[in-house]
Image 1: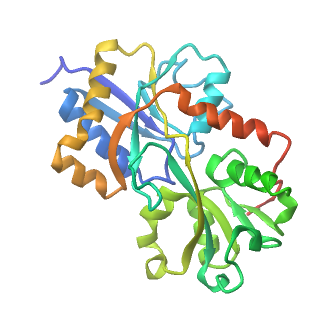
Image 2: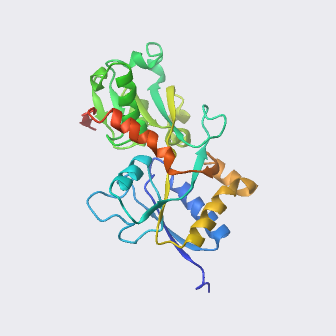
Length: 283
């Protein structure tokens, strides 16, 4: 028996947009490299702690959380004294990320049948637009910012349909229930192969980014020694070919250093569009 091994409680709020198998793989890697025993909770209802209950850091029911940057900045705004950003983040492959830097992209997508008359963002005027939810940086907030920079607002689009998730938005474009959308590029990249005909009818019109990286947040009660081991193990994954190949399946190239300065951009974007919204119809 291994009663002496440290226990690690992980939660991911990044599914179903990201495959839960990615976070199961990270768990397995940490167990092997850190020498811990871990459990993983999958919370798909929100990109961060649910707003109508005590957050798991305060309640001390989680040690490590994978959540969206928007959810993380909200936690910071509450002055939560039990959270600490781990100084490490995954790097994902993307056609625009040639230097393999931290951060991710928002892909603006259309159906291939629309490409004859939609060749740039401004051609989207009057289209049926799908977005995951109002709080999504990659689906909503950066698009509102782009509209503002063009002297427009959400009335630029025709019908605005709240899909509920990035995956739903992709499906709505594929089935022509929506003419366009913006989604987390990593959601699109991983799930394309599962779409009809490999998703060949969903094409990327434009990519916005890099956006602030996905934060990995720790419970401050977790021992400093264990947090250091976790960070060091993740930073060294690129030196382990077997694990590099396993992570590559999910688009992860490596892990690199991260810090809170990376989230100032998100605050600036949110502040720029605080008076704007889509106010669409729930689909």
